[in-house]
Image (cartoon, rainbow, N blue to C red; front, side, top):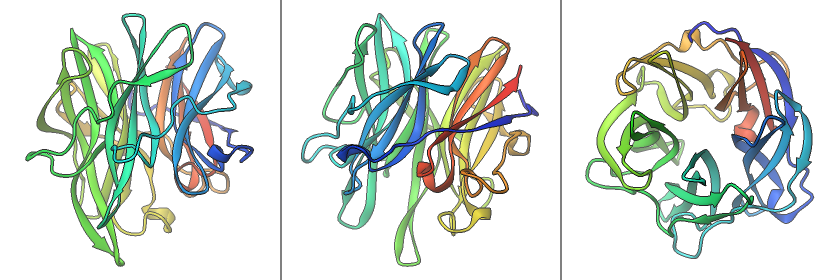
Length: 314
């Protein structure tokens, strides 16, 4: 799918700060196809204390600029005191299994010496309601001797009788301008049930240079036996203030879903000259619909300017 030409359609949604829980950000969109008429877009938002929760809005299928419903409360709140997600959550991906919805999410808290610490969580819902319940108070997997730092932003696919996950994995923390900054790339894991995961430390998308500091939020499509992945990547230094160092959307291909070739120059989408996504584009989530691909993504400042989309012909 390389060299796809994306046509940007603009920003379609942002929070209006009308509730205590949605004072800023509509970040990390996750799209669920409800039926032939409606898509549901989940997103993470924050209150004034930087505490995050998840809610959603519904759009017309194939015409997501037409927002037809906006939910007025969170469908998943942050966790209890002492849990991995006690300070907030963000969506990661959703899929159906045995008439249930498996909603993978990112939970975060803080450590004394670090600004944040993430984990991969799972909430389960059914196909008749819009509510979810945590599978557990703990993350699906946490730090171990192979992965001593945090993991996050997972994408899960059921493929060839296996559950396959590509996820952000932190390799180290570094002090940059008196602040601890994480370096992370994308790894691969497998499961038989979507809950118990076998991790062997397999790196899917690695750093392309010493200047790179983060590769995050993978999304994978398998078509004609080949895997295609879209993701976000950024530099280590200056990514919050320097447009040239900030997040871009990258692209890679694989024959087996494990060994990948980065082809970022063929992603077909970049920042705009002057718009809501002029400084950053990140956190892609794709929908295949008819003969088109729809890419939902965030713009400037990690979702502060809302959610937009682009289309491409297949």
